[in-house]
Image 1: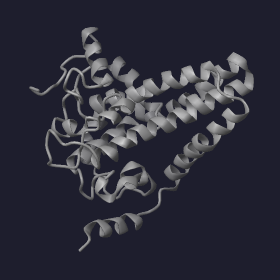
Image 2 (image 1 turned 90 degrees about the vertical axis):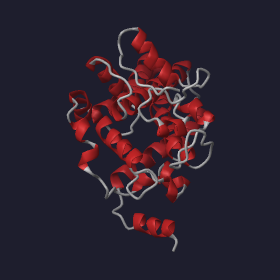
Image 3 (image 1 turned 135 degrees about the horizontal axis):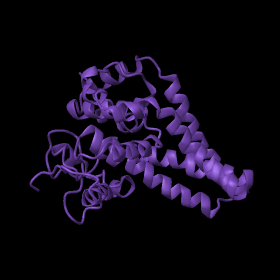
Image 4 (image 1 turned 60 degrees about the vertical axis):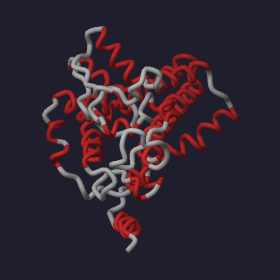
Length: 284
């Protein structure tokens, strides 16, 4: 019996998520069509490129340090204002609120490679990369969100998630208009807003897909997780995914000093400045 084929058929029988699919399509069309079209007619200013880089780093680290290592795995402890800043940055990435993202990720680790895994890599590259977004999830279990529901900062960010997303899109436009008019504003909106969201989303998706399908498994083979050093280059250290699955609460994904893991460097720097504590690590 082909279990994978049966599971894929079951996925296709789920209710279609029109809202998420429409939003994802708009981002993709804006990036794939809008970005090169604007570049052909106008090109992008230094301001647009600067904001793209700054917001890519900010929102990317908001996901890796805030959503992932702090909220989902409790790899360190920090004051509420630091947590709030990280979750504001993560909210700019259009990856849902920390409450929803964290609950899904906790379930991913608990049910990895099984039907209940939100982005089950056993269903193939495209499903684990982004296809899982297009169908409504029938496996929601409140137990995975129970701890997060008690976190007042997480709930605050969940309440104001939509304004945070809009801020990440509108802010570049306003700055661009103030700098050099409407065309400049449109360029900043496309590159630092829509384009930046597109690239942050797809870099994160690479962890769910590539890092569960291709790469080395030097730390364990109990699930499909794999290390991919080059994915770490675009995800601030998240590509050491096999290590992470074996040692989930470690604040480091790349445990060796030479592993490219800006997220662990930020967490460690915060600890030196007194803005983080109780950094969890294995004996590695």
